[in-house]
Length: 388
Image: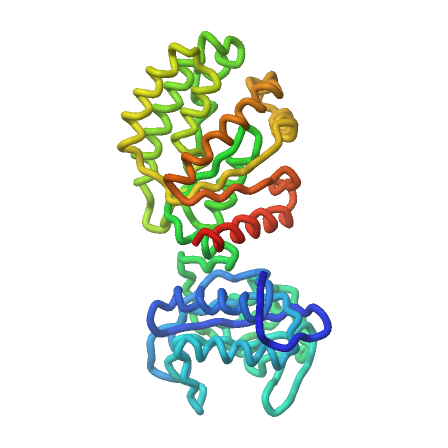
């Protein structure tokens, strides 16, 4: 997942890196630095919040600073070479006195617990404990990391630091590189049969991207419990009410973003109305519903990416029982199987209107296990890279 062209070390190590910029689009420059570090050095583990500080030692633009950790198999010198290469790629020109404007600044703070003192590399960084703009972000991701040269934790070093430079946290966040391709889409929808994990994944993805969520309002629909008791009688008003509510959310709520939220993740696509209606309505009801749907669809805002979570009907049924919504407990395996087939038939429509990623989640429990969430995101990225 993280290819590189640098020589490998014999075992896995965790390195901590400080990153800063005071030229150009500073937040984007930090993001590029982290993305490149993932490609050249290894898997990014943790990323701190970003703080703004005045230039230190010279008159210049204020800096944005952060820290991040990386798992790597590279030797220390190879890590340092990679950081210098990334800086040069983004226009960094090093000054002999160390104090100057810079597009990108990457400092190696720790390489596991190693102490290195050579002509071309000193680890831990010789001045990190004197810099508030390094210790502040670093304590967020590694408060109990012990400096092998000071025999104190990062938290203790921060408390002892005499640097009183004020750190101003900024609202914008740096993304883990695994979200970079997803961030290219301002409106994403998640689809799949009932019980596949749509809403859980929607919330997790929106939180990571700092996007707004649009979630179907099941609890507010008065027809849903009635439908599960008497499907034939209440199917039409149920599907019509869901269609109206989906249309309202997509066309009104999706546009009401605050200044810090750049996009939307919805746990449905409006065309699911056709999938469900085709599965639940009587033969003479569906044409009328189709006409109403067509009128709304033409003016509905559309996502640029749909992520379809493919789940087996039996696993979906188990998930439904686990989450315990009373009105869902009688959903049959046959109904879920029909729904799965309906979605399978509907996938070409989705693929024609937006980028479509279909991911098998039948072997994952991304709600309970963070490692499974990483696997899901990796599978999504692999497909996005192919269709980009």
